[in-house]
Length: 400
Image 1: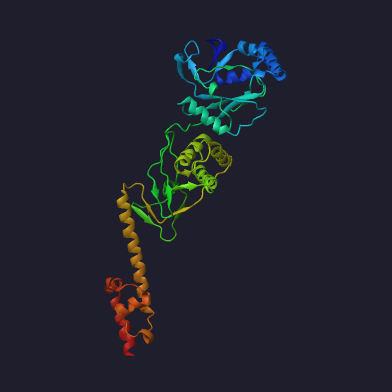
Image 2 (image 1 turned 45 degrees about the horizontal axis):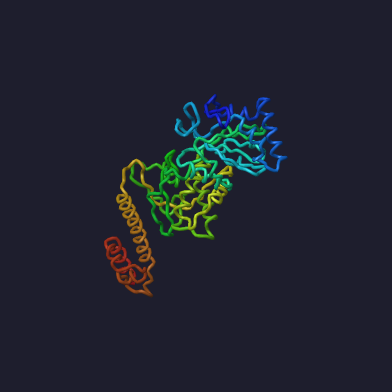
């Protein structure tokens, strides 16, 4: 609910409006208010003094006002704040036209009293330091901040705009001063990239689709499956240890696209929040808020986001088993060694079966090691499996 006072000098609350009621009264003002606003706009347009014109100021001071940031008890002063409305308000002066409807968290914007600027209403996920929040939004929209126009009990004059923009399916913007994103469990891969494994306070953000893909496999009660050479392809978000100038925009676009592809539900503001965390932590120097916002908007505007399958997995572990990292490493190592051992044995036997007696003469373990390239210890470990084979071949070929 937004609260209304008689004018800028009388801060006693006279009524309240819902968001929809506010949009309606801005589109369809009563005759008296419309006449006053029209006169103020004409005066501003024709006067060299602009906002300092006495008539303009007199009209402005007589019009009813609304407060967007907080609700109050009886009168609009800081001491009477009850709670935040969950909205933020920005003024843009000296601009004839804007189009910021591409931002899903922009609820509404309208022509200012002077008709030479705009008021912008934004839905927010979290509040906190008002000055920082307004500065962040100003940077986001690439507009100059009027520090004197920032206060929790700020009043805004009720004008009108028949063409007011209203987004009735708005999302919420999440400010960077909220610590709902934490980069944790960072592990470095062989190509010096780092995986982010993190959770967001409003729901889990996927940085990999591996777990979901594994759910489609039948483990038949076994703790793991070895896919061998086929391997499972999956998508994962990676962040370089540091990203420097020359690679920042491209890197952020790729990262942002992968996060968006893995999280179809994510809002534009939450996507911006996650990318902002990465930006602050890894980009040297950071991308500006405006640069980051443009990248996020470009990525978010794609109707059918896709993921890049940039990782493979040979051994899949059964999610029904409670396995520690050590358990998984141990199982994987034993399995790979067993498979490699079988391959090596097959290679040795194949070598023996195709032995060239004219070139190499009698088959011996040392000769097998030399021909195959395996160490003598590897051959000896398989002596029980191969000795019978090469003994028979030696007997048949050397007797002839």
